[in-house]
Image 1 (cartoon, rainbow, N blue to C red):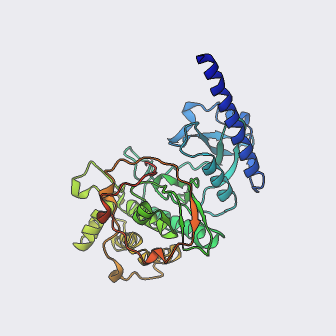
Image 2: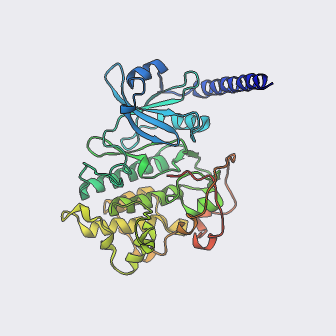
Image 3: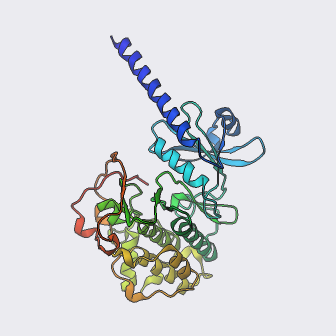
Length: 382
């Protein structure tokens, strides 16, 4: 009896795998500018996925450094069988990034959908991600001078402005964070991981969709209501901006309780007129303290509770380049979710829908503290 049940189960898994492969083939048929690699090619490129070649790992699976037959060095992202990035997210990442070319977005060379394998092949970026280097706990060989940090901040802003305003339909990334910002040889930042991205047609005020992202970077109004706008990305960018200037992650439990949450700490020091104390001391004497404090203020502006007070990414770029001034009268309490981070979150599957909604969500104010009893789910751990 057990043997018969096991046989039926294997048939079911095999049938399900066939359906997934047919679905992948059908969805990727019309994707242009994409190269398909064989599994054998990628095994050869990574020396049979040699452990020494592994350069990253997460809920999606593992990333390996490899070299293609033509000598191109690549990063091979292998999605595991239990990956949080499902088939839909895999297709989303391919279709969005294959159609977008920008110096501040990762370059997708191709993919492999052979058998049960789902693999993405990206250009290799030797300086890794910001969470591995700038925010990592180990020793980092990169000298993150103030000029390097400025370049990273402005580059990420350019990439997001391109996605939000120049691509049609617009794209909301939904998972802007330090681990998704990669650095090339000369520290040009590249936004990566488009598995959670959403296309945002211009005629909609918001998308009503399942909640996805990373706690600490997740805009509270999206976490609570599930109403997605471009301002959710801008909130995440604001948190990232504070991390880059301060050199510390958005949450650090090793610090005293009153200093653990970066956004709260920055706001407290801003009110006390001591914002310069948040500038990373490891930058040294070459830092322009006034400019660094300006960047911190822009981070606060990007995380405002009232969505319409958060600037567009094109205006953020102008502020970072000192082409537009910031009116400090517009700075009020940032939108905080720290009270909610102690809740256990559970991943759920909710089908996303798009709608224009009723009214403008940007006229709403959401404070994390007033919703501290709410439980929200489907948030990816960092």
